[in-house]
Amino acid sequence: MSILRYLVEGLNPSKTSDTIDLSPLLNYAKQYNSSEDLLRSGGFPISLLDRVAFGFDAEAMTQIDPKLLHIKWKDDIDQVKYEVEKSGLTPREWGRKIDLSEPIDVSYSNGKFWIEDGHHRYFAAKALGEPLNANVEINEKPIPKIVGTKNYNYDAFVRDIYDKAVDNSEDITESRIYPNDDFSGELILTHNKESSPNMGSIYGQDVEPAGYYGIVSHNPALASNPNYETVRAKIRHPLIIDISEDRTGWKRELAKKYKAKKSLLSKKLMQAGYDSIITTDSDGDTGEIIILDSNILEVITTGEDMI
Image (tube, rainbow, N blue to C red; front, side, top):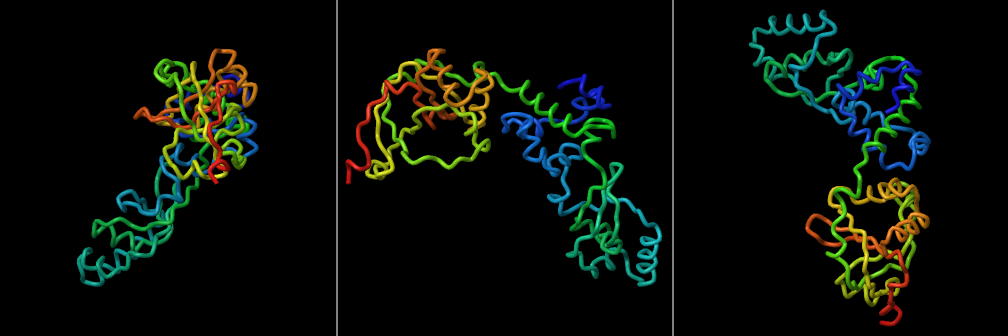
């Protein structure tokens, strides 16, 4: 995080990470190749910013405990109390006659939930000890809550969060690589010859290493599919990556580590001594396998051969 940028823009870094959990923003930022890509996409969704700043987002919050509500219009609740007293019923008896299906209107500001409309339903739900359906509107801006001041620059905020996400990225060499000897040897792979749709940064396609992508498949139907071919790969020095908790983030981690992407990333990996990449889950099962060195490949069959 750039403290200098915060000082220049009037932000207060001491009030950021100490009181706010930034991890949801950091995780969101990691899917982008740069802070500029993140800014061009529109930055952080307001629902995500609200969850980080306030612990909830209005769209997802459809019910609320009446004990959390505060009275904004005293005359309105006094009128309800007068009607209950005039009815001669106990609060619970009166409450059972009220339809609680319609949501009440609630605003959130200064750290509190305020009733805007629905005082009768509020009184009934509180007497019955039941939750209320609610339409919640947040009347505070989330970023001042996150950074600790109303004076902020949005672009600087996004860039600093992105920089922090990149700086805090797990070092792939420490915990996601297994000993190479565990997987070296011969593998039979199935390869889809059709090009994948370009999804950009969503699945890391904008940075993923170039190479021959395949899987270890035991599905006999693929052997006769004209869009697939079967190859033998004589792997000797694979890079083994655990993807059990993050199936695509490894691509961006590699791009950061080697300061390269796509074909240049593959070239640097080969210069580092790797001939392939093998992804694996927590059970030890292999996932996507990328052959970096085409010299270790031998085509066995293609789908056309089986027709």
